[in-house]
Each structure stands twice: as C-alpha cells, then as structure tokens.
Length: 493
Image (cartoon, rainbow, N blue to C red):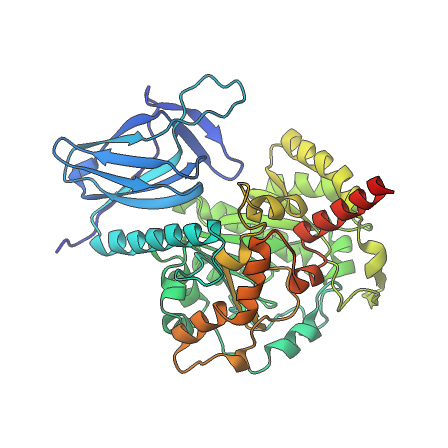
C-alpha cells in the first residue's frame, strides 16, 4: 500500500506538443496536439488530467515503454485519473484530432488545464468510479432511456434553510414563504445525510447548493465543504456575501469550490432597494477573500451575479468596474424568473416600491443588452456570462435524435423542497413524504426512476415538452419553443 500520498501539480509546459496559453474566461489552458507527452515527477504512479474534449466520441491512449491503456472521453470539461506505469514519461495519443472548421490551421487534440501526479490509490479508484458512471449516464441520455442504471453525475442539494437577510426582511425577489412551506418535514442535508445518499453523492462529479438559505450559517459548513470537494470535485454555492467572515473564508481556502455572491447593484443605495444595508460589508469580504486565496492556488473561485432589472440597467458598467477592482473571477448577469409566487407583487422595501412585473425585462430586451454587457466585460478585462442564454446551450441536445434537454438524465435536484427535474421547476416531481428514507440510497434511486420522471424523459426523448416542462415558464428551452410556435403560426397565416 502506498503511503504519504505525495502529489505534484503541473501546468502543461510550453513545448512543441502544446499550443500557446489561452484564457477560458475562468481559467487558462493549452491545446494539445493529437500526440503529446508529460514527464512524471518522481515516477509517481497516477495522474489526474483536467481536460476538455470538443468531440463526444474521442479515445485517449496513454502508454509508456511497456504498457498501454485506452480510455474514452466525454465531450466537455472532465477530470480523468490514469496510471503512469511507474515510468518517468508517459505518452498520450487521441484517436481523432479536432477540426474546428473555423480556418484554424493548428493540429488540435484536447484542452488541457493541468495535470496532478500523485501516489493515492484511493483517489485513483474513486475518480475511476465517477468517470465510469458518467460515461454510462451519457450513453443512457443519448439513447433516451426512461429508466436509469447510472446516477446523474451533476448533483444539486440544499444545505441551508435559514437566511440572515430573510430573518429581518426577505429580498424583494425571493419566494421565501412559498419555499419554506415546501421544505416543511424535509430532512436536514448534513454530513450524515450525504453518507446515507451512497452512490448518489459519491459518484457525483460536481455538486451545487441550491438553497433558499445561507450555507455559511450552518454549523457544519466546514464538513459540507470537505465532503463536497472530495477528490477535487467542484462544489458551487451561492452566498449573500455577508456571512463570508474570516472564519468562514478560512474553510474555503484551497478547496475546489466556487462561491457565487449576489449583489445586483454597484452602490449601497441601490443594494438597499432589493436586499438590505450591508453592501459595504459584502464588498469588503469579497476583497479580502480574493486577496487571501492568492496563497492557496487562487481557490476558491469567486463569482458574483447581477440580476438585471429595469431599475438597475444603468448600473452594469459601474458594477463591472467595481468587481474588476475587487478581483473576482467572473460576473454573471441573470434575469428575473417569471415566478408565479411573486408575479404581480408590489413590495415596499426600505422606502423603495418594487413592482416585480415592471422590473422584469422581455426576451427582446435581454437579447439587446446581452452583447453590450459582453463587450463591456471584454473592454474592462473581466469575464462575463449571460445566464439567460447559457442554460439552453448547456442542456440542449448536441446531435439530431437526442432528447431536447439533458437535465432529467444528467442532473439530480435532491432539494429540501422535494425532488425536482430541473432548476426551473416550481413544484417537486416527488415529495419527501413519498421517499423511503430508511434506505435513503434506494429511496432516491426509486424517486429518480419514478413514473413522473419516466414520463418526462419519454416526452423529451420524443422531442416534446410535457405538462411539467410547459409550466416552467422561465426555462429558456420552453421560451424558445413558444417563440418558434408563434413564428410558425404567423408564417402559416
């Protein structure tokens, strides 16, 4: 048995086998050629590669002088763990080079972020299990199977049901009371809960907290972070930023976590319209976190979000410039959901009358401002993402004949308010009262393969939106389908 578990992380070297460093917008990488090699520090027996394949059916062969093994790759970013055979150098070869069909004349293989050479057989086995499950899940999705043998590799959870802001006055666009009603009687998702989830937690390649709450408030927040980032797994959660105290920031340093902080304004006065009076505290916490993580490999990643509304459209430029100075990694622009629980609401919030329907922007307005925000981000030198356009790109089918949305196959929303099929779902498709919690692993498996889930997958595999999907009016895929139907009717008349 190997002991001590030493490790060495390297970025791909600037040799003839790797192209120049490129900026992904969140991190840097180098394109490899179809064949490339890496030196193995101290002949460490395993290596984790963080890479992205632009092809859905490529194969990577790793070999040394006396050994060779081939592994299939998924499309997109992934982490794979391979044996180095105790050699001082390993060679890699892809079955296919990538032709981007953009006039790029380079020989392209995969996008390689970095390589971690290590001496940990438990890590190697754990990552191999996750990768095997992810491949099985991908095959079940592409085949449109209604019943899964795999578990969804993307896991969404609820770690907190309490919020320091809502304790005083909920944010103007928060469905707080509705959510708390749904969460009644649900189990607390702590370390023991994660253990009982079994393979639903262990085999997840990424975990995202979807709480209507504030995760750093939880007494076991440090335990949650450690479990969720096991084997360098990505863990994302949203915070209002007020609870990112020195103590809570220390729990995140060096962890493969991504913190999303919601601000929605460039000033304390603007922030108070929507949330409360602690804007300056949040900016201070963000600035300190961005400085402190410099000593821990720039981890965690720090993202901020800005919900675009009619009352803050003019603040986007000042907001981007402030976040650039603070040192965050990315700004995500979001839009207000068409939330039936809040639609029509008018709230007097710290002297400001917030009219939810008036604040919501139309699809055409979002399409008009999006390019401006992207261009402004490039000008300032801060990566910008538009949530309203990215969801459908991430979950829609990539090839003819595949289901029109991947969420009910590849993402498990095991939330305190019930089991949901996607982030835009308003009501649980399976309630906690319907789940056998004496054997939580089996109970969750039965829920994710229940009749409502099978019916939903069957519709999506047939290219249709069922009743549940049609009720999710904020979903970009639903909105795109509705717009296409209107266009067809207009053309037919």
